[in-house]
Amino acid sequence: MDSSKVLFGRPVISGDALKEIFQSMMEGIVVVDKAGQILVVNPVGEKMFGYSTGELPGMRMEQLLPERYRTQHILFRDSFHNSPVPRRMGLGRDLTALKKDGTEFPVEISLSYSTAGGTFIAIAFISDISLRKKAEDALKQSEEQLIVYASELEKKVKSRTEDLNVSIQNLEREVTERKKAEEEVRKALEKERELNDMKSKFVSIASHEFRTPLSTILSSISLIDQYRKAGELDRIDKHVSRARISVNHLTTILNDFLSVGRLEEGKVDIVTEQVAILELFNDIVEEIKLQLKPGQEIVIACNTSAPTIKTDPRMLRNVLFNLLSNASKYSGDNTIINLDGVQDSRHFTIHIKDRGIGIPKEDQLHVFDRFFRATNAINIQGTGLGLNIVKRYIDLLKGSISFASEYGKGSTFTIQLPLAT
Image 1 (cartoon, rainbow, N blue to C red):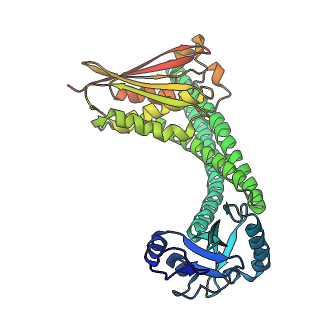
Image 2 (cartoon, one colour):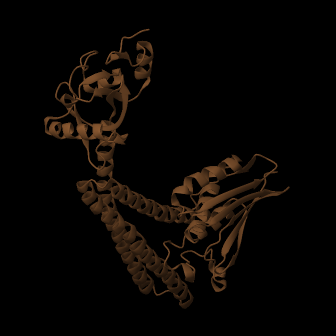
Image 3 (cartoon, rainbow, N blue to C red):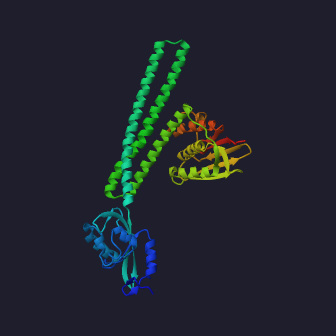
């Protein structure tokens, strides 16, 4: 028997097996006795603390800690010996270890225990989390930059709105100065009213939809700083999530405005290719999961004789993502959303069904109008542009879109795309 590792007169494990296990571990492993004397250290642990092979056994565990922690650690070690339960050390606070050269570095430590020859031994599993700490610091810096960016964005929106006001005023003066014929003046005034209406809606939407998530972000950042000082990691995660959701909402709003701009300018090109439809469905559902309300689930059913259809995948993805987002947004918790695909000889048809608030009958005629919001959706975030963009994308794909809805019971949107011949 290879007894190269012997604890208290009995072999703990064979030398070859111990070497194989220790070398395969990604964490540092330090085994100490009741008195805190180091018995065994794996190669990862030696490298982590900057010691050569064989230097650590015989040293005391406190020598791997900064001086300010050593007295407290001795008390903790005695407590662990008296009530040994596998646990993580330092919950809610940062732990720091000490290298041979005196350098401190952040660590995570999990404790376990065993017996060797009837004698208690403690086992510490140690991870160097320096890279993770750097990533967390980088995230904090990014969040601070986001606040600056959001502030600059609000200033740009205000500036561009003022520019639009100046442009409209110039147009009014030009119309008056040129004294066009009565019919031309009437048409110009109609156009002017349309521009004023669009400007008013844009300013109203931008003012509200930007301010709310920006306020959430600023509030979360402030609370994160307070919770960071208190070491309340769960609350920090909660407010990081809130900030992330608000950033995603801002991104959606900007994408809507940019999409409308590109459509108005005729800069949207159709690039068709063979698309694996079921794979596309699964990718979109996976992507949208983070936006779903608690307990919501998207159920996919796809009945197609061909594995692919020819269409523009980017445009179809945007359409489906928009409709599924609406289905989630206008439905309650713990509801099912159905995404179905059916193919016949001429068309591929997609149904998206929710069990949400539905669309009032008197509003259904205007569902695809730009900036339109149903009367029962006024208090739910949105720009009123999404379905207008969806309709125009479907038109570009030479398809059709329709819907059936019952107030308070939900809606089903149906997309019909032609199959390539």
